[in-house]
Length: 526
Image 1 (cartoon, helix red, strand yellow):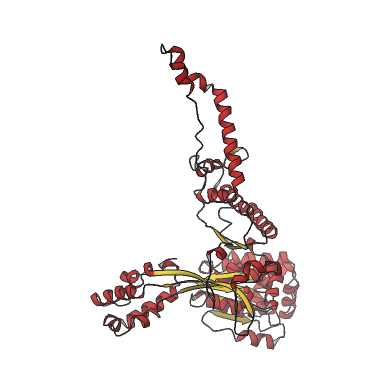
Image 2 (cartoon, rainbow, N blue to C red; image 1 turned 90 degrees about the vertical axis):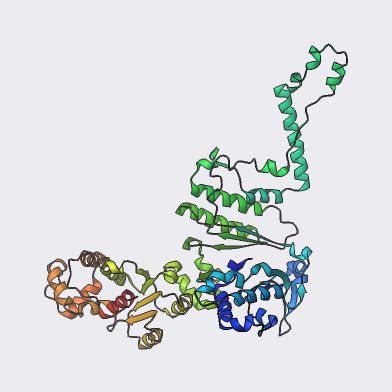
């Protein structure tokens, strides 16, 4: 690891400690032992849940917790190792300069010299672990920077590809390669008649020439195994891979690399594979191909655990949300921990699961039905200042979503609006209203039972709708109550016509219902 791998919040806290105590540190009043305790440390603990048949692999990774239960795991620590060196460097910086919140940025690497950090791998509460145990656990990372793979004819492979091929070759495989190479050479020598090239003895006047030249032979010069592997070309449809688009190159690269992991599995307890943005440059059909492949790969290789980071909801399995972790602003939120089973089931049953829009949009509105969606979209289309608002349809019961949204978006400035129907459920309204903080979340509910009465009874909407659509929809002689019921029972095509007119500005005096307008005003003020 390095300086960039340390959590930003931890670094900020450390630098603030240095600013607050720079005179005491420079004077040596704060001891080196006390100072080092305030330095950030990276700790990663991995807990293993072995099957009964896997007891052999984890026997050296066991330790007991408070209740005496035996668990299995590993701990990685990245922390200061040369205490006096670090303390001396920091004291030197603070002796020569007086820092403030601006000037500290120019010397932040010297104040946190990670070249004096070291890492260790151990069993928690137990101590160090031998290499013979650690080698049973493999880790391979496929990063998102795959664009250069096979970009030209000269760039015919990648280090990771060659490495994985080498991992899959046994000693018997290497022997077979060498034999095949010699066979190839013999065929080449025969076809090219190379022996006839070295026939100088036929032209020589020296009697010893024939005997001397008879000992000259052409020998195979087998290159190192890595050189042979780096000469491999990947192709598609009998064409160079470099001739394919960037998406196909990324897809083929991932398929080849991941497939190669399924090869040599002997004496491996766990193979951890991480993939960064598997959807990079892939069209929707190839994304689905990759999703299907990853699903089949994990099912076929139980000793391999797959982690991937993605910006595509295509890779999220709605039936297995306990495996989803939301990452934002240096924090991670597992849906396994943040939501109970009922909460996860609520998301699974919801027809909309665009978690990226929900959790990461600067301004987002959640609503319940198609009428709300068409009406709000029409209004937003008529107001350019609202164009960046995301609209998402959800079923009733927003509280679980609000809880995790607040954690993910704490301190980000993002805002969430929620529009609900009253449905004669005062208790539900009161329960939701408690989450309306007026800062990041605005929740509004209809005063009437549902949306349509709100629309008709707002401002001069009754007259506007009756005059505009009275002849077309048969609303000419209807009362307020009759019109709102007709609106409620209207065909989708009728509703769409009205919303199109709102979007195009043909109903300039039409007013949005109060509960919707307040949410829009709240988001607009952000």
